[in-house]
Length: 305
Image (cartoon, rainbow, N blue to C red; front, side, top):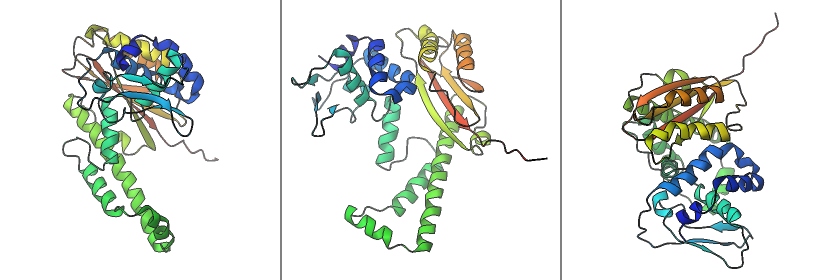
């Protein structure tokens, strides 16, 4: 049985019940887990040139895990055969939880997985004219050249105070470049989708921000908005809590057919997220993509009169 065939045989609600029981921390990722599940169930599997299988077994630490997920797109993984160790007595729901958890180790969609692997390999993400990514990776490689692991601690202990201060400044510069690169990437995304809004004026001055990308996975593009409405209504409670005073920028792109029920999606987002500022752009895609930027700002300082 392939991964896609197995997911089609198990209802997501039963998977979600077991997942939140085994890993309570996953409750804030319900929207993302559901999208991954739906994507695997819907897409057309591609042939795997390596003929790998998904092996579910207990490793040397006694933990149950599946392998051969992180090296290919979901469309390839969906068509792989699932092989379960005969010594494991797992219900279909529990097995599905382990498979879904392993599948999302590097991200909930192909876009996230590709970006994470590019970062690990120190390659600039595919964003045209993003000078900040180029400088980030150049500085990162120059400052952290490959050295034997056994020499790392010896090298760190040998640093004097001035060198440690220089390291601290360089680390802060890398964090700043990484932040600026992400803002520039989002700004280019707005330009490509004909949205007139300057993100730099907002994100460059904020305390911090986080980004989540959601996709609609429906057979009929006309159901795309209602699909996302259902997801946000069911699985968004824990996801929207902000620790600091803040607001949310929501970027919605999609084709005309997919955005037919946009007013309903707009209302759901308006009632779900913290102080949302909603931007809408055009796209040739038959589905809807929603990028949600949660922005944290400094708490106001109160002074005695």
